[in-house]
Length: 304
Ligand code: PMP
Image (cartoon, rainbow, N blue to C red; front, top):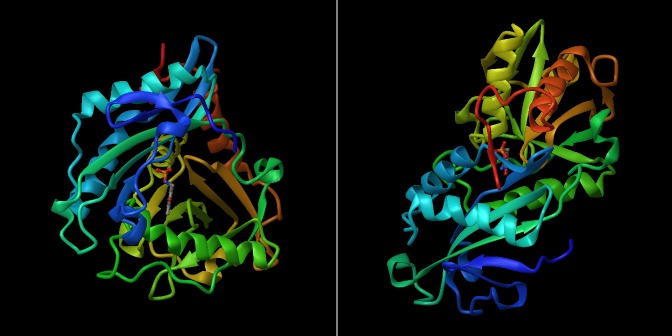
């Protein structure tokens, strides 16, 4: 990944190399940070940020769970995101705001550590590779998502992403593009950075929030688009074998966008290629973010 010229760090734009924290920072030792991943898309009138409000709201929600204060207002961070994109001259990009605990103590009293806030922006293409639009091969991971009452799955807390790294690493080890993780009870949860949808007997199913998933913002957009297209959609627990027997499967997420899954554990899903329902949803999604149809849901915030 290429570094950019500017990073927003503790209230101002600074050169990339100056956006640093001390090795004694609490976040480095304990993963006490909260982050977001947001995309800005290239539109004819310039870049536009996708679901900025929803992402910032989730940043605040994750901080609430970790009891981590953000020393800026919502409006300040909203502006900071737009300023950083503008300063780096992106046409499209991935945006990574992070709130992290700095140096104060090596003990567990978070309130003794100051919060630092940074926003970096980087160029990002298709997250799961160029073949992703036609369907990826995935495996079920032997690593489970966190059990309820251990880590708060619905909060995007830095330290928890070691779980995602282990899940994603197993895909590489086994020659898959990505992994799907089960929850502690053996029900399907999600990918390391993606929610999952299953087309099952004409209905679109997705694991509920209680299956240790992140409350994905793209997942919410899929609910909206499916309703518009007249595709029934429901939150429902999904078993592992339903992945093999589904008519269609796809991942969704900010980085992964909508990505069809063509096989799970080397078993072809449906016809083993992108299915018609997935295609309809992908078309509806990309038509909006690529500016071919009006932004009827107010999902896009123009940068300029
Ligand atoms: N699950 C996990 C664990 C994630 O990290 C992400 C990426 N933020 C998602 C799902 C998808 O969420 P979103 O659509 O908000 O990017």
